[in-house]
Image 1 (cartoon, one colour):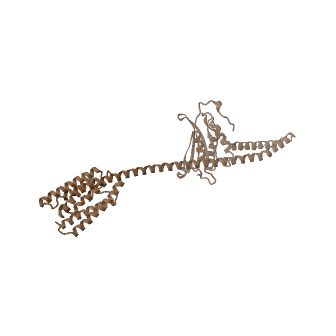
Image 2 (tube, rainbow, N blue to C red; image 1 turned 180 degrees about the horizontal axis):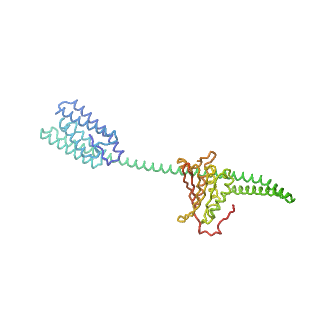
Image 3 (cartoon, one colour; image 1 turned 135 degrees about the vertical axis):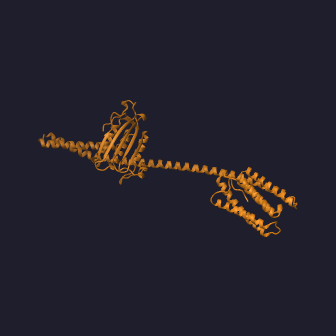
Length: 447
């Protein structure tokens, strides 16, 4: 019979030891009934059966708590040790005294106690068992002198030796268990770190792949634009020459007016092709200082050729008096153009798109907001907006916002958004201002 596991021990060891104790309790109860039923000359067999029945009841309670993952009387080890020592002394008393085989239950109790408790508790339990044996010896000697004077000291020596050996073994097992737990914790920590590193590498790989795909698409677009400009440019030059030749012949006023109109339209076509070629040229990655309104104007000049732009109302409030910004001009134009085209696609006919800029002096930033009154984004879509290859457009690639955020971050800024379904979306670009940079370092580009 064994005391219960104290709460101070680790839970894993506690439950493992409790499993052993429950088995030993039932072993002791069963063997007790066997000893009572198979032997004669007992002092009081009925009393022994009653005491064993009490032990069985205690074992049932212990089993019930164990199956629920708890320890019965786990916070009272010495109290349980007193009960068990009394229980064993009563078995010996009603059996055959100190020569009773029940005296070896002290041994089982000592072994279990040493396994489950700290050594100091095990030795205190041994002291309680010694007092129990001495009390039993005194009572038996008063009734009738014992026939074997070595029974008491022999029992105590064996129980003490078992307590020492079991306590030493338990400490080794507990130390090993603690080292295994530490190793397992360390392994788990390394596993988490490895997963985090793998996730970072995968994200970096996806980002590089997406950027590479985007660059390939832009390069292909540049080649296509250059080819179209070359093929269209030659016929336009010929037509322009023919018109100039016809006008030199001094035609009538009506014909001259029409030829002048045709010449203007040809000029418009040439300017459009020029803008297309400028947009498709390899982008500069040099950081320069320039005005934000210049980049916004250039992006708007490119966006006007998008077939849906004419059905939208675009309001621009970007003052040229704002402090200049330090960024990659071509990248910023690409970011603004991408946000603008997304807003055009998100709004319906006569939809309103507003571009506003402000100087956030306390943070040294210039903030550009692009707001639309379109369909907005659902909560689930908002979580994936900046993920590569995520798009809500039937023909979209899902790379625009992903690349835009990377470009803004590389320029030392931040791209964020707010959206409400069926209300609209606002994207905000924040870039560092360059108020103290001399104007002569600014790269001026006329749209």
